[in-house]
Length: 193
Image (cartoon, rainbow, N blue to C red):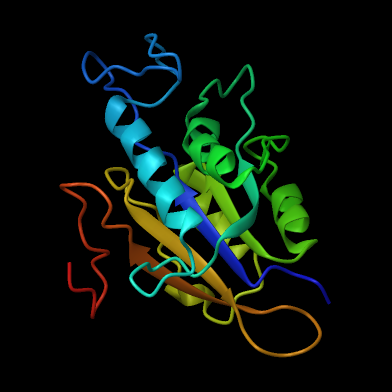
C-alpha cells in the first residue's frame, strides 16, 4: 500500500504580538497581522534549508518533502502563517503548497496525506496538532503530547513509517528544531538541548 515514509508536522513560524511589536509582515514586507513576524519569516527560511538538504546526518528531519500541506485561510481563520511558513520550502524545492484543506477538516487532511508516497510536511494550527497526530495510525499514540505548547514554534513532530506490508503504521517522535538563537530543546529525555 502506498503511504508516505515520513510525515513531519510543524507549527507555523512566530506570529505578531497581540498588542504591539513584533508586527506581522507579509512576503512584500508590508504590515499584516495575519502573517508571520520577522522571526517567523526567518524560521520559515531556515526550515527551507533543512528540508532542502534532508536527509542529512546533522538534521533531525529524515525527509526531503515531495508534498507540502498548510492550513487553508478562511473568513473565520484568516491567518496565512501556515502557508507563509511552507512557502520558502515550496519555492526552494519547486513544489506547490496544498492549502485546500481548512482548519476543522483534519480527517480529510489525513486521508490526503496517506494517499501517496514520499515525504510529507504539514504546517498546521498548533491547537489541534495532537488530535491531528493521533489521527494517523500510530504504534505509540500515548507518546503524543496532550497539547502543543503555546510558546513553542521550534519543534518537529515526526511520524516515521514502520516496516511491514499492508496498512501503514507510524512511530511518533518529537525533535527540537534548533534552528534559531533562543530555540529550546524538546524537553524529552536524551535531548541535549
